[in-house]
Image (cartoon, rainbow, N blue to C red; front, side):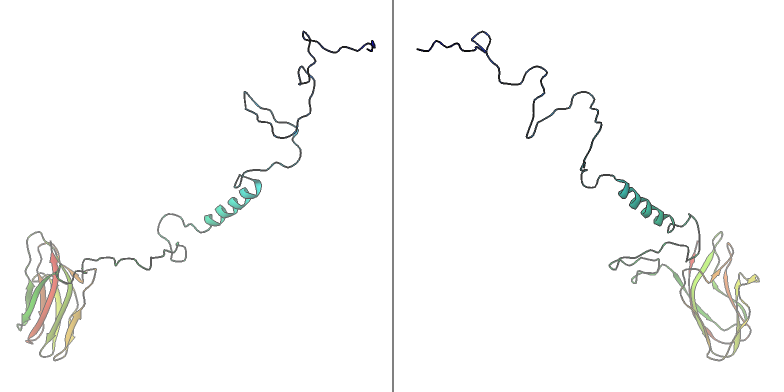
Length: 209
């Protein structure tokens, strides 16, 4: 049996450690999980740092600034302006019809009055009502012989037209309008005056309130 001496590096009471301890720097490879605690100071970063998709960058900010600048030149100031200075409005191809007060075909929001007289001078076509105004939106008439027609606001009142000369069997037609053709003063009647004795026939459509 050999009696050569053997150097002893550890025993049961002082085992030889092979895992890293103390302040000795140990090489690390692979992925190391880290949990943030307190404040992290990141200094002296080198190489390429990847940002998430869509993150704010100088390039993205420049693009945004350009887009905002282009909007500034296309948005008009608040208030009335010319057609060239307005923003265009696109109406959908399947847009429903915009209703107006004259759209319903089965009812008529206007009251009709018959025009039927042959007397010379002023003829009351729509009688006045106290504190109410007559607004005429449509009118048509035909004369049997040559005469001159004048529309007036109330008997002996203000002429709403000049004398309109009509030949025999001639006529006058004022189609329906969003704005009234004639408006009487409060309580005034709607008068049609003629210079001759022609038979004047037709109808007038109006509101009164």
